[in-house]
Image (tube, rainbow, N blue to C red; front, top):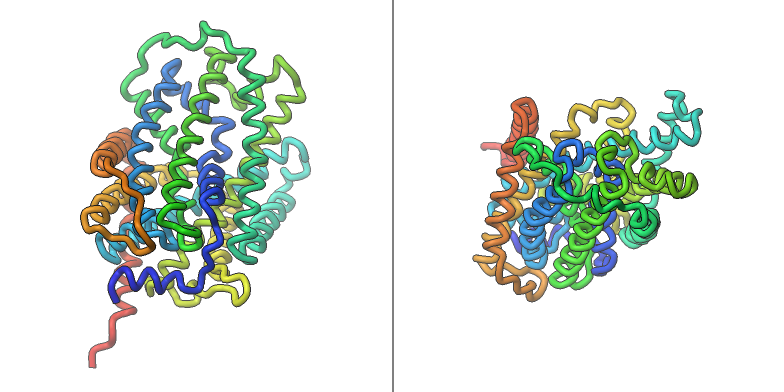
Length: 438
């Protein structure tokens, strides 16, 4: 069976019910996660007053990656998203590595955000600091998200649309209200940051911009995918870029040098105006976390589903609901793993591993886009005609290599161990799939 037939067969039980607006909302929701409510301070600590430039530099690199993913997504719009790009371009081994990295990054991030959500809510409801109450809320949270998404892609997409809008409202309020507090003297570059500081700031920014690879996991359920995937992706990433740069500028303009020491920079920036607005931003952080988790549970299980349908994971993980046509088994496994990690807290030391995993995802994704374009592969209609895919791939790959070079030895060893584990799982799957010798 060739790659095209395999991918078409993989998605045969799924319904294409997600339009370009729904896909764009999913991308925006996952990329603009809970981190945006605290990230301006973290980036400022590393890059100082040059923090907005770190976002601009990151936006250039991520622009190259997004163009590559838009091109590849219009050619191979399959469940699992980039998993299908790498598989079609380089074969099943590359596809499996891509899928493994995407899911690893997603499940670790989901665990971290689930735990952080409970900690945020504990500021309003102190009883949640009790270990039993905390555990119960985590379990209920992931169970509700699982139940919604097990009903099908359409309910999951509607939930994402609603939470994305709910998330963006407090951010828009911050931009409008905070703009009156901006002091122009806080914005000029006070001193050039160190190369190391700027590099670490960009690592944080890459983490903030990451997520489109997970959101594209629902590509097998997108209507008219050869157009909807690139339109939805590029519109979403352009929106994210404008939001991030604007939020950093307003936060920096309002707080100045105090920004780097603020635990809740957006809420602190609005505190002089109104305590109510400050509380709104704190509540917005909680809504943002729920929205991110909704998008993650909507998208990430499709990677497990795709790998199971291709025979690299147990077949029962590729089962879909008879009426919902949703990958029920994959959704359950994903939320169970995320909840377990959130309950145990082991995700903390692996958070940076999630960031570095995205570097590998983006390098492999850019390379896949070049190969798919060169071969003229298109499995679902005429693909979008992007002239600069090759240049975009060079920018994306080069930028990601530079970002990876800012990692510490311990961080590099961590991602190396993860890659070895994914490779071992692939070899085991191949062995189990091979016919026994007679």
